[in-house]
Image (cartoon, rainbow, N blue to C red; front, side, top):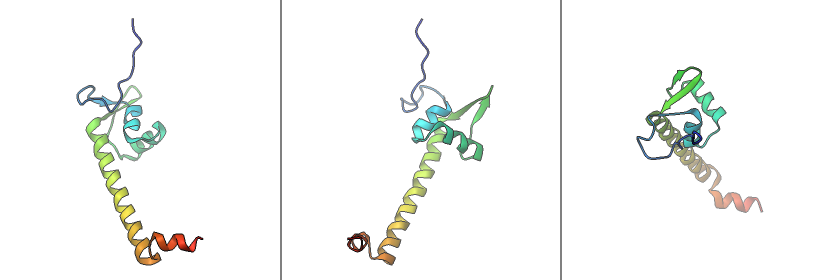
Length: 97
């Protein structure tokens, strides 16, 4: 009899309707411990059965979209600040020499 194995979270849709915390963590490129913290904070909905957390792929991908959008906004704001207040990255590298 063959050994059981987990299905990677990035396989084709429909392979598994629910993800384990490890699969969700892999999909988000975070540790399983951080994934559990996100669940505790209510950032991603989940189902808990017999001590195991299960997440819908759609919910994990929705969280990823929101997280990535916030990161993009913060990066744009940082770029604006650097350009407007500090004269841009070129000016910063000249000062460092």
